[in-house]
Length: 142
Image (cartoon, rainbow, N blue to C red):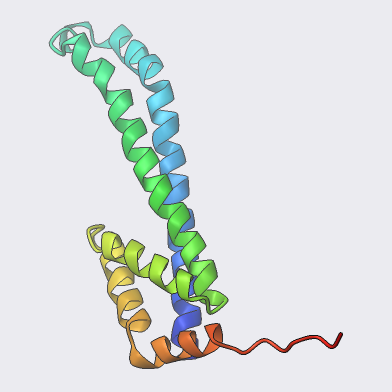
């Protein structure tokens, strides 16, 4: 099960890093949306007149909100994966929560979420994480 735990940690770090790149692309699109619409309107005067400007003003806000949500879950997933690689119970719980949300991201997020949940809810994994966190600490001689 140790190999599965390591694989879950590594796969989550890679997947969440790609999600951060996607969120940064959304931020760039939100920032450059006005410039992009201005550039397009130079060539297509008739089609751009049909879209109300109020709707165009909402698009960067939506892109930014989606990017922030993706960034929050990606950072939480990376932190949880690092905790799992270090055999910390808080990392296991964090990654479980993020994995449940990742089930909604079809198809790769669903596959990774199911695999992560299967590994992290396994009895052997729970025993391993509990035994690592309950190690008695030796007292230093005075």
